[in-house]
Amino acid sequence: MVFSLLPIFIVEELGGSSASFGVLEGAVVFISFLAKVFAGFVMDAFKRKLPMLRVGTALTVCGKLFLACAPNVFFVFIAKSLDRFASGLRQASSTAMLAGVEMPHGFVFSLRYTMNLSGFLIGSLITSSAVHFAGASYRSIFIASVIPTIIALFILQKKIKCDGEYEAKEERKWDIKDIALLPREYWTFMVVAILLLFNRFSEGFITLKAKSVLPGHTELLPVFMSIYEVCGACVAIPIGRLFDKADRKKVLTFGIILLVVADIFGMFSNSLYSVVLIYIFAGLHMGATQGIMAAIIARAAPQRLIGTAFAVFYMVEGLTVFCANVVAGRSSGLAEIIGISEASGPFIIGSIASILAVFALRIFTSRGV
Image (cartoon, rainbow, N blue to C red; front, top):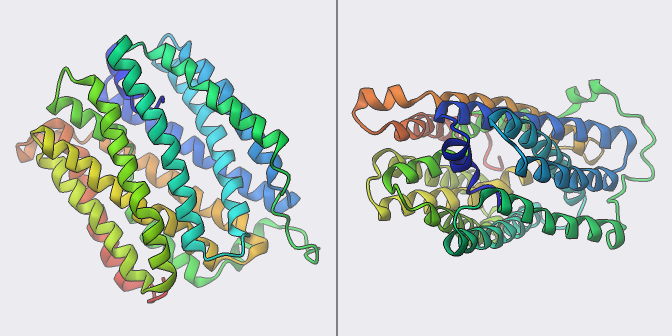
């Protein structure tokens, strides 16, 4: 409910710039990843996962309320930081719990991604309807977004009892030096992940591109995000099942190529239909890769270090995405040199990073990834 309107809220109502949005988005995403790192290490140290999930959900309520009251961009940064920190705690704990499920990891994580997108889709549709019938009352929508979070917190407190406990036989205490015990397969995948994640700058830049092509059509932006989410949800589970059975390297390569196509449309889009294609291919990419990247890590790491493995990955992801958002926010000059619109700059950087990721995947990883 918040995501699709926040870039426009910052730029139009609070007077922020594209560059300030890029720095803000990169910073709060980095904070989210720091929370995931913290949660991963703490879970392995105390061998508990569910409490972290509950705390993260409670903090999300506070972050949404603070965002609705934000008078300027700085307060948006504070609110988003709290919200993203909470999100990091939630994601890290739920990922660690799912990694212990005795099912094919490609399917499990892709199913989780599909369920997440289902929530995003419902929220986007609610937001689009509210903007269409009641106008762009951003703060009212931000306040309303607290309601489903409170419901989720109630379910966590009353209905979820399984903590995905660590093995009872495991008595060895966790140590930070255990990072060195993560296998070579894990570290080689990090090389690919860094390059791929550099093209994972905020989807808000797609929103800003859409706004530049279609000025005066703010009510369509949540619809575009819905298209993005539907595309991801439709392919996530089939790709996850394919990943469990087929050549994993080829499956991941296919997912990266989808993002390259999205970047090409992002660079040259100048109509409604080409804008929609950006969202379609970006959504297909996320559905085809988000779950299987988590599955690769869960498959490579020993169970007693599953939180640590994801913590290190989140650390790498946070640093990379932070840099990607800052670069994307300042890439308008590059677009002007080439002779295309300023909003196309991030997609030039992203396409280069994705192509390099494909080469790294072919060179540095085995067939099983």
